[in-house]
Amino acid sequence: MKRLQIHHGIFVLLTAALCAAIPLSNYVMSMMLLFITANWLIEWDFKAKWQRLKENRSILLALLFMLVFSLGFIRADDFAVALDYWVTKLPLFMAPVLFVSSQRPNHKELNFILLCFILSVLYASVFSTIFYVSHEVQDIREISVFISHIRFSLCIDVAIVLLLYYAFKEKDWSLPTLVKSFSDVQRSFRLLPKRKEFNRSVFGVVLALVSAIWLLIYLFIAQTLTGIILLFLVAVAYLLYVLFCHWKEKTYRWIAAGMLFLLAVFMVFVGSVTWRYFHVDKSQYLTIDTVTANGNPYENNMNSMVENGSPIGMYVCEEEMERAWAVRSDKDISEPVEKATLVRYLNSCHLRKDSAGVMALSDGDVHNIERGIANVDYTSGFGIKRALYPIFFSIELYRCSGDVQNSTLLQRVEYMRAAWHLVQQNWGLGVGLGNHKTAVSEQLKLEGSSMCWKERIGCHNQWLTFWLMGGIAVPVFFLIMLIYPFVEQKKKITFVYVAFFIILVGSMFTEDTLETEAGLTLFSVMNSILLYGFNLNHYENA
Image 1: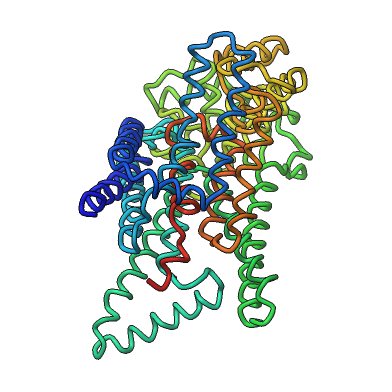
Image 2 (image 1 turned 45 degrees about the vertical axis):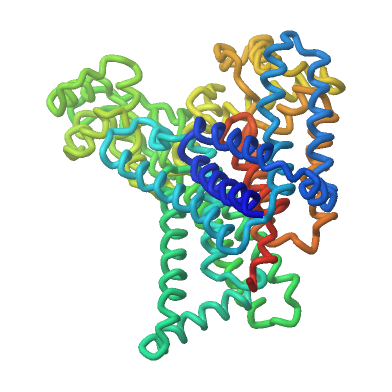
């Protein structure tokens, strides 16, 4: 027993290190998973492990998925490359087996493992923010210095869910529980002088809430729209659950309805921001000036791109603009890109693109233009406009010219469109393991896409990626593997897991989530922790 206890302690420490590595290091992730496997083998005790595995039939689906995934070998052009792709997906099978068959951690050990993940996410967010403040960042994605910004946003969403869980930890995630928790906190503050044992409880709740709020703020700082939207969906799902499942709790249903109303107001606000961006008040152009105050002719194009509610092509006098810019700055704007940046910035400030407009710019505006910032609203630290305006510009650019190269969102649509055409042609067995990226690139060239210069790119949709790798059986079986635990273990499913499911599975519609080390490890390991290996309900009253 002492030997088994030592191996169990090693398992807990390695699992904590693995979770801490997810937001920080791909290399450490791989090493920790290998160490956990080695410890599992050395521990032996396979009879007890087999008994634990038999109690979870859904583990069999993980094994069957790897067999179905092997269909991709049939049409693979290079067996070595195909084998490499197959091996990279092994954590989808290994993680559930390792965590289900191992001895379950107790309450404190589970808290330690999840706390390591949360602290790692917090550290990475603070480090990234310091990097953002201390460096001139051209692309906001650069501030995610450890893993890709999308995968990091998924880590943040999961961490926020866990922080809220620990802030209001009770038997379930019902709204009455949350309200009761707030009441307990209030009573704790009143009784603090007499009952010091409440001190740690209050401190933990406050610390968890502050940490969750900070991570939410970071999502807006990093402008990770994917993470924001997925977290929004989790909030809506929870409030709808309270609204329709707590029939006897009218007070709490009203609270949920009120919060849904606030979310609806927020969506209306987003809609108004969108409308103000694209809507042009044509009444101000009923009379159009043809010359500047200095008598030089304007170029006026009402059908040009719209940005911040103004047509970019209206009131443009390049001669005056360049002459005035030479007075304000030493940077040359003779190149089309630099000139377009100045024009767009003036337009975003609702200034005319002439000498008067340039001279009206502040020194800060001049510095922004020199850095390549093309819209005054891009200079705000975070917020709705800062997150949405680059997307709006890309959509408008695509409408006017068909160009998608300035928008990762539109590029994803282009990739998925090409992938779907490939799927229609190869729906049975796909194009083979290791061939899908090359096939998508070739399809883009065949269709004359503006993204045809990209080599070996994915389609940014996990379902289409699986389909291309091994045919229709792979995504169908993967979907079964995801849904079956809700049938087999429906009594053990908590809203923590439901939220995790929404975040990770939702991301698979716009990302190749499982095609990166961080995304694959986050899904396979956290899915095993929250569903297979550990049952949060089991620890509620421990």
